[in-house]
Image 1 (spheres, rainbow, N blue to C red):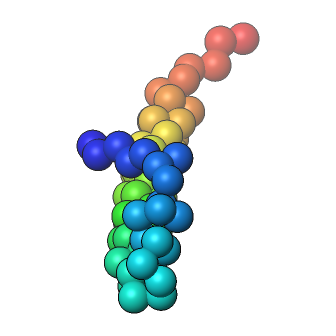
Image 2 (image 1 turned 180 degrees about the horizontal axis):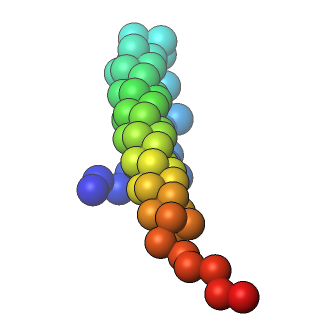
Length: 69
């Protein structure tokens, strides 16, 4: 998994030469947003799988319990 240093001084890197360098900054931001969205989709899928597993275990547990009077 990659880590990103969002505290880097992007003002000097991207704005020191005027507006010509704003496009790389916008592309970088878009790439980060795409990665966050992708991770969110993956997490949603994992949660769905875990919920399905939990439901199956719960149904299996409820069906296998024996009541004793």
